[in-house]
Image (cartoon, rainbow, N blue to C red; front, side, top):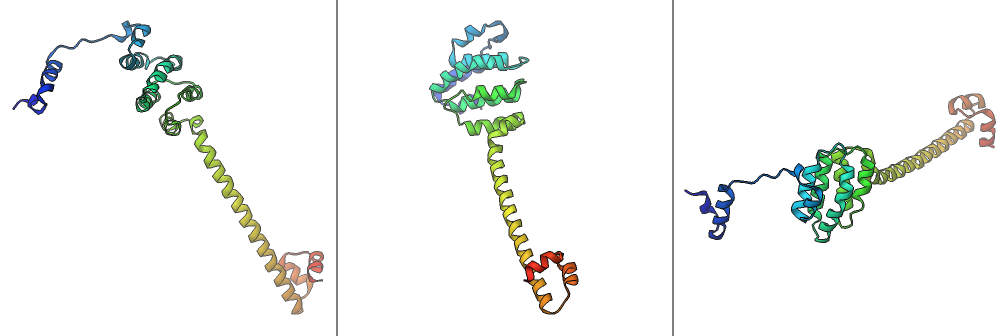
Length: 194
């Protein structure tokens, strides 16, 4: 009948203290950035929450990068990915290209996954450049294949027209009529039929 019975005995006391004790609220706007930077995990999240609604989060993010690099040393790429995604979703990023450039300074995050997510969150072309490059190459290859196919079709069509012209000439049809049907000039027909 007691919710705390669902917890292991050693966790009950902590849970009761956590749920029943009054919480101390921290006004992050009253804490200095330098004070918050002293605490890697708590400080990084607090700083982010303090600055997320800045009119341009990029100046903050450039300095914040040092904390993220420190967290990166602990192998916490998932945490960094979450922070960057949160900035892209909730922050104001007027210069998205510069934001991308700053994100690229991180070493151990999966850049392809991160850039793709940023492209989805920010819906801007600059983040899609890397992905578009591959698509562009694919489109160029398709266009080249189409051009080659068109050349082959054109060549086959021309051979067919020549065959028809020769057959018509062999059956005694005049050059005038052959020219009209095959759309060759009489000069071209004389070269083809000679």
